[in-house]
Image 1 (cartoon, protein in one colour):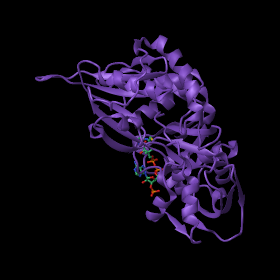
Image 2 (tube, helix red, strand yellow):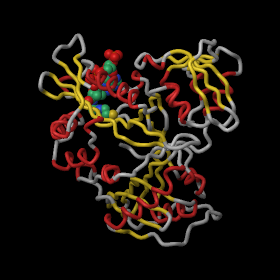
Image 3 (spheres, helix red, strand yellow):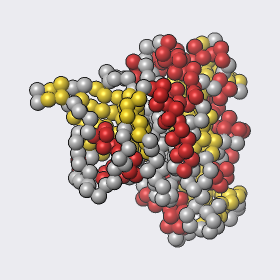
Image 4 (cartoon, protein in one colour):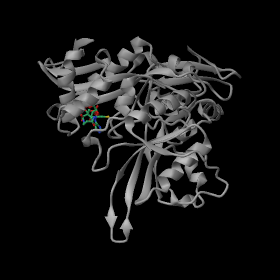
Amino acid sequence: MADTSPGDDQLTIRTLTDADLPVFSEVLATAFLIDHSAEFLAAERSAFEPARSHAVFDGETMIGTGQLLSRRIVVPGAEPVPVGAVTSIGVAPGHRRRGVLSRIMRGQLEFLHEAGEPLAILWASEGGIYGRFGYGLGTQHTQITVPRGTAFRRDVAVDPDPVRELPREQAVPIMRDLYDKLWPSRTGYLDRTTDGTWEYHLFDDAGRRGGQTAMRFAVHPQAYAVYRAKEDWQARGPRARVTVHELTAATPAAYAAMVRYLLDMDLVGEVVLRAGTDEPLVHMLADPRAALRTLFDALWVRVVDVDRALTARRYPVPVDLVLDVDDAVCPWNAGRWRLVAGPDGRAEVTRTDAPADLALDVAALGTVFFGGTRLATLAAAGRVREHSPGALATASLAFLHDDEPRCLEAF
Ligand SMILES: CC(C)(COP(=O)(O)OP(=O)(O)OC[C@H]1O[C@@H](n2cnc3c(N)ncnc32)[C@H](O)[C@@H]1OP(=O)(O)O)[C@@H](O)C(=O)NCCC(=O)NCCS
């Protein structure tokens, strides 16, 4: 892609090549208020896909960046689908609020539309940026803080196999094996099939530690945890904080074993875990109130193509509805679509002239796509209009999914 948009002759946008990486990395570090370093460049290199990266130039100078990682994500009830995982979004401080991000966003969505990838996903640095580009708040996560030693209920089964601390190079292959087995059946999980995806996920330069230790690796035959610790020596005794970067377990008892291990570590005051919004841990505690919970947005989801996206997932109840979709950024989505899903959960989505049962914007569709938020909630927020009585209740149920969608991997 290479074009000059009218109205600002100086600014051009183009797809990148390998040679652009060092400057791309510098522009990005500056945008994020980080001093550029060899480590920062190495992290960017581990994920860089030049043919899926775009930059805006003022004359010869790169001033805006964005990239679409090639990932797959597990959608409700079906095979994982390819997505554009949006990252490396940054605009040089002196060039902001002149439409640079807007050009990158449009370029990315056109790219994905042409590539046939039905969804774009991202983690937002600030919650107010992406709604205008049609992204909806598709999954959320909880930060759970639990005091050291908090007791489980007596009926919680804890797998008796031991948890061992392993050096990174021994832990990673074990973690990869376990993750490969588990991810395809967990809604919202991303594939991590390449070396680069693991390197990027476990990048651990001093700039990312915020005064904490390097990543540590606790491994059980059916679970693993990656965490950091921050020492804290107080008059009443040590109160270090353990922050878990990732906890993955194959079974409930292995999950219990790993949580128990983290909660029983000496010198610790509390353990902080990034978790789902309906996390089993809370229900394992003798006193659930011991788990302090704060809710955050996780994945922002953009439906790139209504028909491709809505046929990629399954529906728990039959549905036959006409949706009138508003999409100012991707005009190919705008208008009426008939969604028909049968008893097997598979859907057909076709263009129609029939009157609409529901009207909503594409960001609302992204919000409900993974099945973690009710369409009825969005209607209560004034984001969905019901034209046929009963259509909202049917659609709200049809878009739900029993396996809570979680994407706890920031990228
Ligand atoms: C966020 C950022 C990329 C925006 O770039 P930009 O080129 O200034 O954005 P644009 O000029 O295209 O803005 C488009 C619209 O989004 C709005 N917008 C931009 N940044 C915003 C923000 N941080 N919060 C809320 N709205 C924002 C603009 O006001 C504009 O609104 P309008 O269409 O009503 O006029 C840039 O400020 C930046 O690099 N920030 C620091 C790094 C960062 O947070 N990156 C995002 C990582 S997820």
